[in-house]
Amino acid sequence: EVQLLESGGGLVQPGGSLRFSCTVSGFTFSSHAMSCVRQAPGKGPEWVSTISASGGATHYADSVKGRFTISRDNSKNTLYLQMNSLRAEDTAIYYCARGSVTYGFLFDSWGQGTLVTVSS
Amino acid sequence: EIVLTQSPGTLSLSPGETATLSCRASQSVSSSYLAWYQQKPGQAPRLLIYGASSRATGIPDRFSGSGSGTDFTLTISRLEPEDFALYYCQQYGSSPWTFGQGAKVEIK
Image (cartoon, rainbow over all chains, first blue to last red; front, side, top):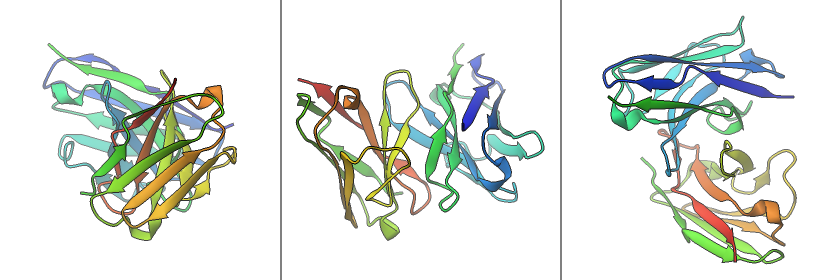
């Protein structure tokens, strides 16, 4: 069974940092691109970042470019998102999502999400 | 950036009826790289349809997708109680990969 388990959410002050982690099981992690998608309260999902299966290529939404860094450790089946210079508008549930084998930006499995709240 | 606009915002229907949801793109979605997701309260989105019309693994055949270019449709036939939820479209043809604002199917 495919499972994605996020951790690392919480309350942080504006300007602060947080590291989001997603540990997976039930599939070959190193064969899939992985993404972070967030959803602010009452809003639709918003793509944040994607990393290729090997980790050699990364993509970011303009809203987080220069502040967030995505990485992965294929030996630990874990995805990371380092979030720096956090702003109130970054408040959302953060999901990790698996890219399909054929289309890396098609999200075929999702974790349950972790809430990040940026507030003073 | 491709903006996806979903309509209607809310659809009120009874079990057994058919729901028709629309997703209109601000520019053509390349190769029909258009997906639909279902989301229930407190849960993550679940992939229903990809490539505009292909059902994801385990999705019942009462869910169907159609369309191309800028106009896409999700049809849910014979609504079951578990189908009342939020639905989002997403394009994965060009960066940034964007989602619609969502459409709610509620029990009438």
